[in-house]
Image: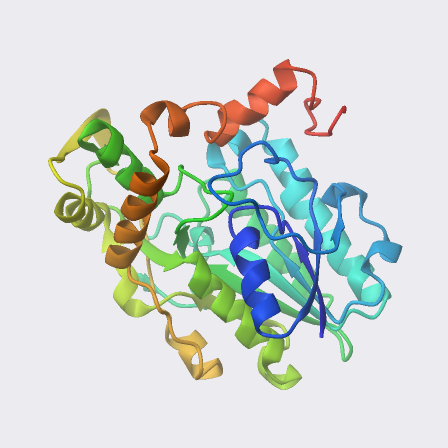
Length: 341
């Protein structure tokens, strides 16, 4: 199967591509490589690639592929808050357009990296795929809009799949330090503090990026009638945690650290628990291999190995919003995030 992975040079994509290759898929990437100066550890695996902004994709770029795994997006809430229009242009309008073009050239499967963050402000309910959406951020709202529009494109020859990933974590060549587990461990390792920006009570479902990839592999291999216009939460029921639970895992893993609450810490409206029964029902072979505790250990071991410092992850190399703003100030990107070099 010939598979195009958009965003293949990003946090998830750089882990997903080698795993897809191991499964025997013929993989091509498409990415503007916004974080080309941000490699953590080893360089991402090199595969045939189209270096292009998703807003500029043409039908010709998509010809000949059996499936598209669409990861490419602005995945940082603060960046989306600075310019919500940019988030909607890239995450929403470009995604729907790629799906339309894919259908027009005969691509049979379109796997969209959606998000459990669409459920947003949910209180104490445990939410399955039928739950009402209550997105809080432009990023989450864009996911809702894509699902609504792309699901209408489903036909006998075009099958959309919406993989609603739980909050991701894990080590990657394009690591993100704004994600909760990666962030808490980084603070603990470099400062001795486990910094909680909420009061510790909000719930989050967690999933490792390798387990996200396992879900993608299942969706690529499944029969069409199983995945056609399917929306499914990606994670496991046991991996719903309150923030204070995650902080405890970090405290038990990183020596000599203590929990500290930010001065303005309070309840976070983004609190949701998610039910993952459906993915295990439709993909019986899907098994999450990671737990949040193991993810904390993976991050800590990696930070030790690479000698991570606070200046590293708080600086312009790895702090994505600071990195983007620096590229704009240097004239390498314009304010629409288009390369100028």
